[in-house]
Length: 398
Image 1: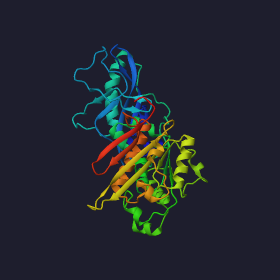
Image 2: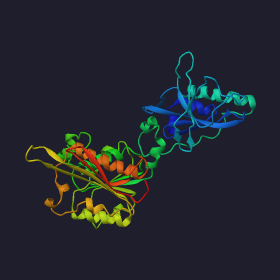
Image 3: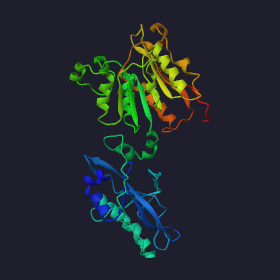
Image 4: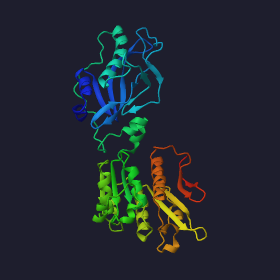
């Protein structure tokens, strides 16, 4: 909260006016505002408003706010005719506060609020006036000590995208997860791109190779020529890039094998985007033994002899506790390339991105971010006819 006040005079003015101001999940929240309900009883609610950022200056998005209480009424317990109450909304949630209504009214004559102080002050007056007619002693100005509601974020800047979409409460399910990404080639780098935009607690990267020129054509973004010449490790290259956004990215410049698998012990979920090898089976067996959920990805692409075109499949296979029996039916750990369709090393960036999307969506369904109707554990996309097939399902009821 101190950081917020330092760059926003209008928020400081609200605090100096005595309002209990909080900063929660990309919203400015003012709590304990008196209002009147339909029983002519004074109740207390909270106002919430999302914001956008211009540098370190927060800017209000529009003239509306959200309200956590019941339908506000006049001093006689009657709802206002043609009032500022816009109707029930989709329950925007900020921490412990969940809204029930959206308010919408514009100031005259400008039809636009100057800043947050102007907007909140207007709505607070509309709520408090009827309450003070019933009980003159009530007030929204409590002059409490500054509430330390500033949550230290894993991001270097506020996730106003989740706020703008109204999904901050859903995104909260991603917090406190410790993620591992094994293999930072084409698919692994796209997985990192997607996961780095979520509020997970920690992202661990595992790869012992160099970020080379061919990697630049399969990874998101555009690598600088000077950095390619520097021959950084893959994990260091990607950590440097994504640490611009996410704070807690940990690089492990190693190839995982039986001697260092304990590096995975603290993880809550693992993405495997590595080539087929004997070590892959060792890693899978370890994750299964430790009951660490995971998604393994595979891209099997060949060039047809007749038309000289690419065809093949993309796979995402998830393993979770009590649901491991299907793993080796789909995930190959063959030693030789001719034993394994997925080992063929034809990779194209959009196929890598699609494999990453399939894997990340499996993870997000697993933790409840997305609705999961059938709870399938194996998914295959066929390039030629663009079909997406699901098979092998969890033991849970769907």
